[in-house]
Image 1 (cartoon, protein in one colour):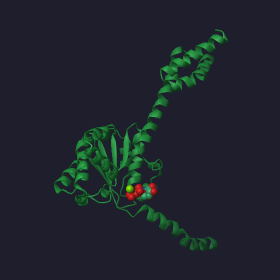
Image 2: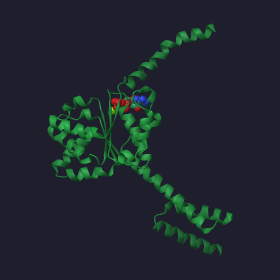
Image 3: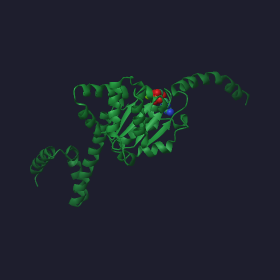
Length: 270
Ligand code: ADP
Ligand code: MG
């Protein structure tokens, strides 16, 4: 084949790969074909190699899209979470949850309780990132914001549609349930969301207050019991009853300055 024909063929190939939406193959065809010719690969190996690259990059792009739509803080990962700071939380249990699939398929929930600053949002965001890496879809929302959105949807008679849109997420994170305003209309949309996803799609909730004080979120006592019942029925509960991480970090930042003197003295004596 003359150089001119080969050039024409590759231009045609480029057009076909664009048409078929195979950008990775289009980018790699020149390099991989040269390698294939040079090493005398069988035709099947060449096709497989190109398709493997295309599928791999497609998966990477898909995960990146899921990460962007998730609204998760990019830096709150499990890798940057100090499990030693919360001995009451089992790292093994969190890592098992990070595998996803089985509990998400059952629509099971995760509930994180503890005072402010103990790492509830960080831990659930880290879990969210890990689940996205495992191929799942996650949406992180501040509970009060989602409630407002659903309330607006109800006013516009679009609530069922908005709830259905949330179905595409395997896990819906409602961060800071305790900050939802005590208002019947707001909490009833939250209740509807909980009922809608029950045993189908998972919810993760972080809250400063344990179940006993959720009466302050759901005005109606019967609604509180029914919401807690559904959420807790298939749930992993992580109690994070430690001192604030921020507070401890600030105290430890000051402490070495105070400890520095005796340490130097010991060093000098040795
Ligand atoms: P909460 O949601 O319980 O109020 P956050 O998750 O917002 O707490 O944590 C407060 C700050 O402290 C965040 O910047 C978070 O990244 C950090 N933090 C809390 N706990 C840990 C931890 N165990 N390891 C690393 N960083 C932590
Ligand atoms: Mg938080």
